[in-house]
Image (cartoon, rainbow, N blue to C red; front, side, top):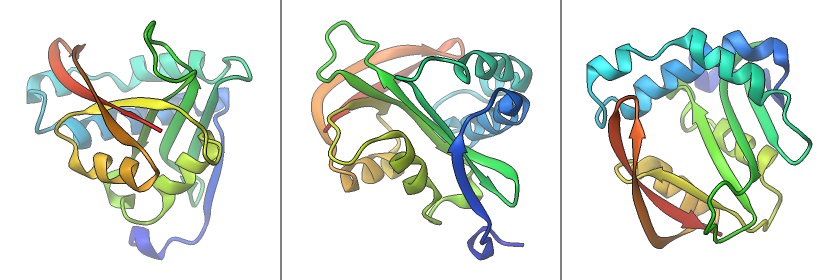
Length: 168
């Protein structure tokens, strides 16, 4: 069944029992998102099991953290998270940490539902996103973000990734 014909879409808080499925989806999303930015060898080293271990921790953080999963017919297809700013020179108090959605579900509105679950209407926050990720840039602009001129190069899977900062 094609993604656009799915009707059973649920966006709900992440649970600790979701860790294994989130690890698998997270790894797949990294392959789909970064395949043109990171070497194949680095991406092949991504461990769904290791990502699941991280999700075990992320799922039980305090109430100031918002971690949500999107499910289609009971299967996790994406996730999003926000919380307190992590940067010392943060331009806002809150940060959108991530939104990842399996490629098959892009354009279905699920990404927007995830965003709405972890970001309050008109909430001021910031995020970092890969410089060469135009689809994500368009999504964030549609949601009221603008580039603020900041960029940095981060270690990512043993390589480097240039990110730019958006604020709202």
